[in-house]
Amino acid sequence: MLLLTALLLVSIAVGTGAAILAWRERPKPGAFPLVALLAAQVWWSTCIVFRLRADTVPAKLQWLHLGWLGVVCVPVAWLCFALEYTGRDRYLRPRYVALLCAVPAATVALVALGGHDLLVVESHTIGANGVVRFEQGGPWYAVVAGYTYLLGLCGVAAIVELVGSDAVAFRGQGVTLLVGLAAPWVTNVAFLLGTFETAGVDPTPIAFAVSGVAYLGAITRYRLLETNPAPRRRARRLVFDGMREGAVVLDTNGNVVDANEYAVDALGITRELVLGEPATRVIPEYERLRDGNTAGHLTLGDGDDARTYDAAVTDVSDVHDRHIGSIVTFHDVSRYVRQRQRLEVLNRVLRHNIRTETNVIHGYAERFGDSDAGRIVQERAARIEAVGEKGRQAVELFERTREEHTGRPLAGILDDCVTRVRESHPDVDVSYDPPPADVVVSSALSAVFDNLIENAARHNEGDERHVTVETRPDAEEVSVVVADDGPGIDAQETDVIRDGGESALRHGSGLGLWIVRWGTEIAGGRAEFDDREPTGTAVTVTVPRLDAPSGE
Image (tube, rainbow, N blue to C red):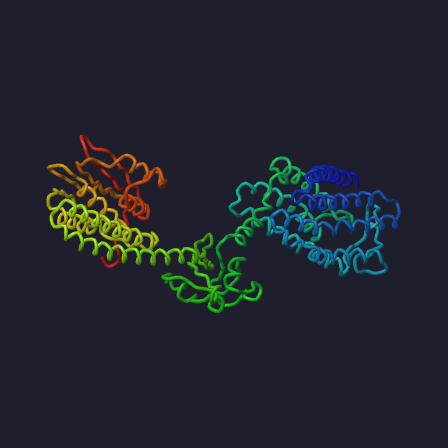
């Protein structure tokens, strides 16, 4: 018994040291349950030591009974630690912990009452070494054993999930904790199977020395309580519930399994009541979204409370790339839709008024005949009309998102632009290097190149006016260079475009270059302005190549 006592004292010393270190880390997540776990282990070991040292049967029974307090506290403390450490503290509400303590409380009550064989079945057989044996094999003993292993497995599941996750930084902690649990488990199973001859004394607390060393290593080497994964789950849930976008999670059968607060408000539902319900009953027009038809917006609500949303369905896959569900997201675009409607009305009214008024101006200007005054009036009216046309182009750019601008062969875009310029400016020599037919770009670039080539021809005032359109395709991108030998673009114009904003004292003279910038950005590219020698400007538009439209 001396060896057994010595091993138990080592277990007590190591466990006490680990408990002191854990106590110092309070109130960090997992600190208090770990202290409770280590304290229960130390108490259990201490009671066995005193039981071995007792000289009388009643004294031995007394320490046996007191030891049950540590026995039943170990699994509860372990599970509470595992849940709090891994961020599952929502399961540690007082009523849940009270339920966990039901079996331990009943066990303590049975020990206190005595006079039964539910826990301890006494045997008066005297062993060869003279030690009184107490066979702990009553019915409630089996209940306690099963309950202990059940809670232990639940805690192990939480730790194993962490070890197998993408949180690589916490794997060392998790493995060490599993080692600390495995040692007493293996020892206890071996004892229950009769592998050890320990004169009826459960040797499980001896293995707590290994557990204590493991916990000490986790605290000191792997910074167990200094840095732990507890906030990860709560933070992800906080982001899910707090993001300014609705999200409904569906399983593989299209049933609702979760929804964030934004979706609950947008859909006018109660989360608890819709869980398990088919998405077709919860989400309007879900069939259309499920089939991949995301054209148009989703309107939720009635009357003045109606809101407009962009909705999309995103598949969710596991680590084996198997489909396990989907997420339906709702992004409120009501403000954007209202702004677009106002812009459309404003554009329509302005275009109509500009066209009407310039027709009147042209009519009156004809009365001046071929005089300078008549020519100037005609030119100014034409400029006003051009501004209205550019406004229309700008509105068309903004009416559609980047995804709504379809792919179009670059050769077709440039052919149309060059043809129009050659017809409207026959005195300008436009040289054009067409790209390969398989080069496809965003259709938003039609307005970009229309403005670039038109401006290069119109503002070229030399005797011999030349405009060149050159294409430079590669595997991922294509560059189009529009160059002229005119007076060049004023530095203030290009500076304003590069900076992306205007002011009362610093602004451009028109919409043309803005359309170039906006259209290029929508196409996912960039525009660069360079001076030419001796005169002129070269504008390089570089955009990504797109896949050819289906059917071509």
